[in-house]
Length: 465
Image (tube, rainbow, N blue to C red; front, side):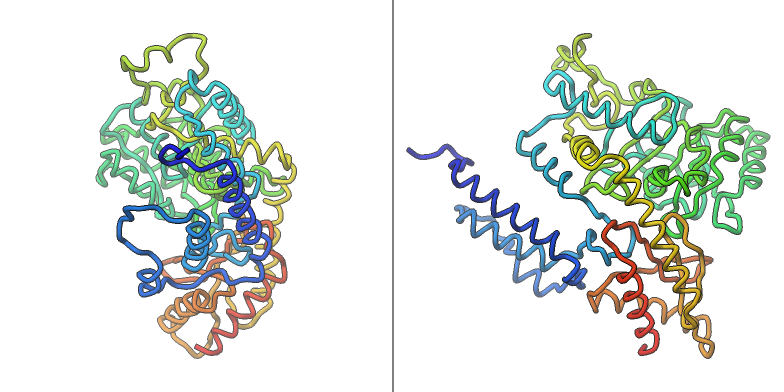
């Protein structure tokens, strides 16, 4: 008997599943011995990916083999132990299985009527993050990533406080937040850029002066956006002092902790995040330093009603979901009606490994960056620019006979050479408008040997360029 459209036999499904699992396991277990990746080759991309719309099907096993080969040849592995650029995405196998289950069971996580269990799991998992961040009360939801988490929080602040208000950021605020402000209709004229102190943190005295000047001019302040772990240097804005300034003017405090808030798991680094618990809203990015596969972000708020006020909707086709017996409807807390079951991967991985394993992994990344700093400081060919903070540090070549412009060009060429070489990937950022090399050492499998060998290769590049 012929199968209905879009269906396989049970034997075919099992065989494909085994093949897919074997490929993922092979990827994870052999990754340290392989290259991080290489630059995209337009000719190869054109050869591998046929743009024609297929009218008929093809053998699923052959398709899977070809797809895996094509993907492996055309991506940079952000989950590689020597991927030290941007913020790595180490992921973990349990969470990958959770994503497979969520997709395979086709869970719709928008409302509690059709997904009561998933709604409870999301509520519990969000509350774990709330407790870890120290919020005394509150709630939130999972979104696609840090960009959307920031956007959701800032929209809630705007609905609560009103439009046409001022927003306060710094030059080191993540660029996605500026994009989000424009998306929300907050034009640049209402955005105040607060100066940085010598540690590249928001200067609270400048913030106080700017808030006071706006108050005298009759401009109301809506929100101060502080950062817990900047992408460039890992700096943490002085959250307690900023919270004091916000409290004095009844200003919403939002903390972008997409990268660095995970350091609440570290006993040594926890004091850096003092004041996080005083935020009105926090953005987290579990697919960064909480070791989850893409995509999962999280927005936390001190008062969950603020999200409901900003996003809930009434519709005749949703009437049954308003019953008091129905668990939480997460579509009332954010912009998505159709939502995937993102919470499952974090919930399962924490249950599988325990939160102490996550703590150890975060501490490992911090210690690796501190070791890298010691190696750099001891090497005559390097100049440390910003010290290790939350597993991020920056440095540049020290070449006495070259001008600052020549060193800037050399710095960029050294970073570009890592992608061509493929052994490791290191990229640049800018500190005081000058390019610097940057390491982010958050991968739990990255070793001291990986760090030292990468720095040795970078040193050889300096000598050869």
